[in-house]
Length: 227
Image (cartoon, rainbow, N blue to C red; front, side):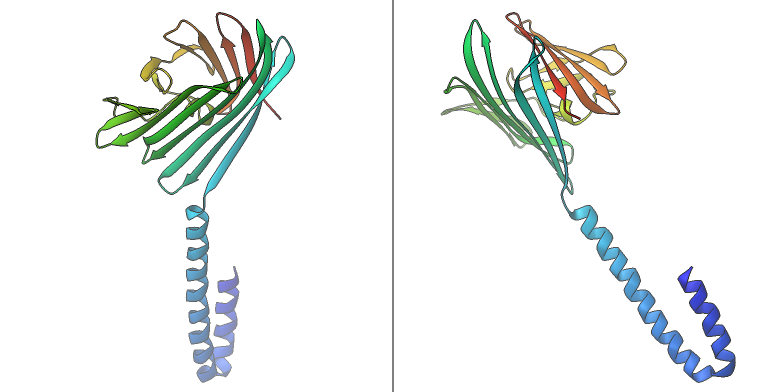
């Protein structure tokens, strides 16, 4: 709209002052080029800057809140970093406090690094790190390392919070170091059975994971997305 108005004004001015009108036209062309460059730089900065998604969940058992889960995803260029922090305090046979931390790094859609840490009543229960080396993954547990050939991993358990597994049939479990089947049991409702016989159900709305139902042989609980 503005360039059109400037063009009309210049055309009117040119009839009366052709020399000055030409000089003004040169100035306006320079301003226009500067505006184009400025807009391009703003777009580059926008898409290059990290884009962060954060979700909060309440952990409930028998209607009472027993903990919380924080999920975050940061996108920057071809790199994606996903993280989960959880803390649960409950009495199941005995009073316990469980703390968990998970993180995964993806580059060009392929997992290049992940870690999973679990602590129960102050004692370390699990501490695994997985790193991509060539076309193999190296899993480190303390001083012990194993090389596994699960390349490429493009969707692991933490991704279930980031996006609905539409057209995804398997998910990689860092805990069990294997791919697990994703069963579709309803509209936006999926089930994953773990090698130990326990299973989780994941529910989605508009692509967001809104609820997770945990079915353990000793207890049941749920993760509910906070509004």
